[in-house]
Image (tube, rainbow, N blue to C red; front, top):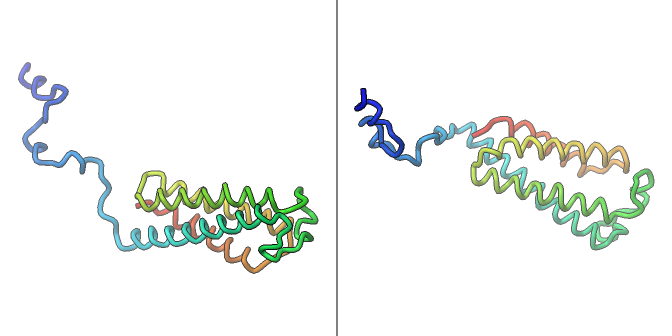
Length: 160
């Protein structure tokens, strides 16, 4: 009986059948199927595009709060809480731009949080566009961004 317990003490390698297993592979995920690999690439493309779009748009709105750099009239803000585009630009830059940038890195590195981050960022994007459409005039880019947010939300449901 002592020999049985002695074989499984801390630091012991255990039974012979486990001695040739690479410890780095224990708990590793199975190789990705082509469908999951395609979903990951799709999420990377969507997150990269949305990150660049939000970072550029947010920065331009913060640099020119009157909307001049993006040729946006201040009348877009007539029903919002803001008098100019600075704070919406700051929110766009930080929440959506940096958020999608972080989501891109998580997806690129295949972390366990990548799927959940994609779902959350897709939902945040849809809420952002819904509020934007409610408070401003409708613009064609909002439909594209909402579609990409929905794609990100749905593609994020398929973890690698």
